[in-house]
Image 1 (cartoon, rainbow, N blue to C red):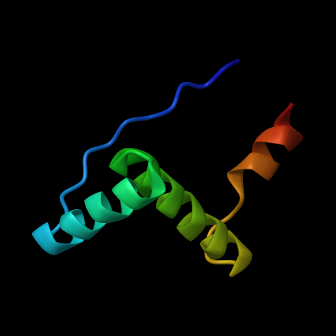
Image 2 (image 1 turned 180 degrees about the horizontal axis):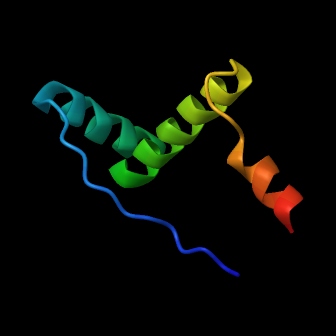
Length: 63
């Protein structure tokens, strides 16, 4: 079964938003893509630190 990506809305302080837009222009990526990449990296770090479980491993074991 193919899972569709989820959409969320976040509120950023103006200075953070401005820096995100500047970085997105430098990297030639939309701000939403950079934000998603940052969240993915934060989650990977939390999994590696043992703070949260790796749901992809659990899902593959259930199949």
